[in-house]
Length: 105
Image 1 (spheres, rainbow, N blue to C red):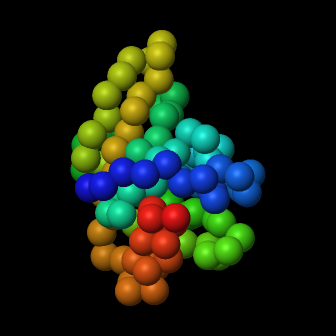
Image 2: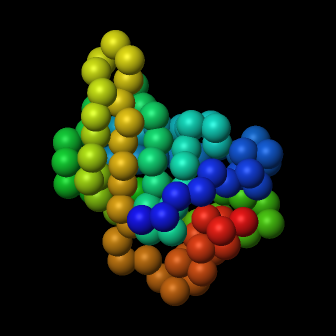
Image 3: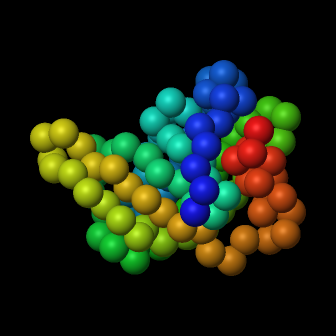
């Protein structure tokens, strides 16, 4: 997974929504790092490994990107929060192209 901080998402002040079966988070762009094949974010909530999640990324130039993936890492404590890593699975070619644009911008 390659990593780059996305300036266009951070500058747009849009919210990023992460949802699991029983949890829904709305994150600021500054709390998220988007990668070519996934996402990392800081959360006050712990997630079990292999939890399936849905992510909605909104960025005005690229539009809305809906992604589904699984949690592959979740490290931290309830006091300091958790760093969650998620890998996307089963993306359409259009969503993959938009995500690549975000990751490499």
